[in-house]
Length: 130
Image (cartoon, rainbow, N blue to C red):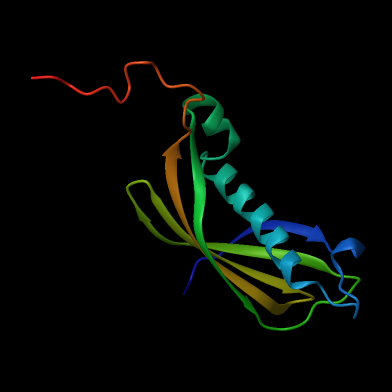
């Protein structure tokens, strides 16, 4: 059995609806992104980790599947699963349900990297003469 974690819940916003009253395709990613932040916090690799270390998890690839329409009013329930972990890499998945019905999924590949310094020291990039 797969071990999903409940990571996020939020109501649908009217501004996210298209002209036909459906959740606009671009806005499916918003609750998934919010769930990703919650997942990072759960494993202490979110903003507190960034504040301590300067390292952050960056999304490098996301695959969305639109399974069933979402109309207002709705509350998104997001469950998440860690698929694979490797040094400085994380693969996880989210499942979005509304009223107990699976509406969309997201598979995410992320990489842990240190934030770039705003101005590197003047010696960075110099050629070494031998």
